[in-house]
Length: 123
Image 1 (cartoon, rainbow, N blue to C red):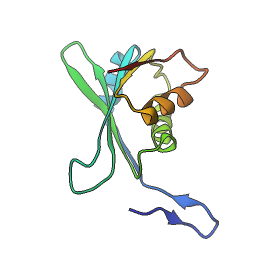
Image 2 (cartoon, rainbow, N blue to C red):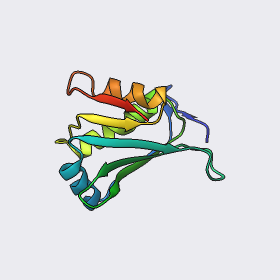
Image 3 (cartoon, rainbow, N blue to C red):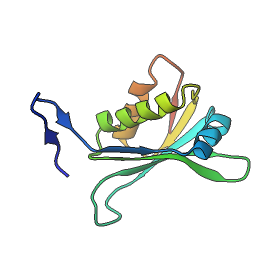
């Protein structure tokens, strides 16, 4: 889906973030230590990245939010993380586990810079 150039020169991009009240509660309870950020890309006929924000609960791993971006860029992932931080103002994880993706690592380091000490674990 191409970006949409507006009359004022700004560009509108696709960003869809989703989180239920139940997922918000799990993020609050279990997302203060370790969060996982995982994405799927080109696994269906639409070539948009789908990201899952997950935590380990006392029972299993659970998806506590998801987002779809138009492209897999640091700026797009950072914008989605900003949305989740706005929705969850008390969310302050100390660690993230991600794939070896410079995009994801860069977005996490930029978004959480100076607020908390985020350790990025590469798996």
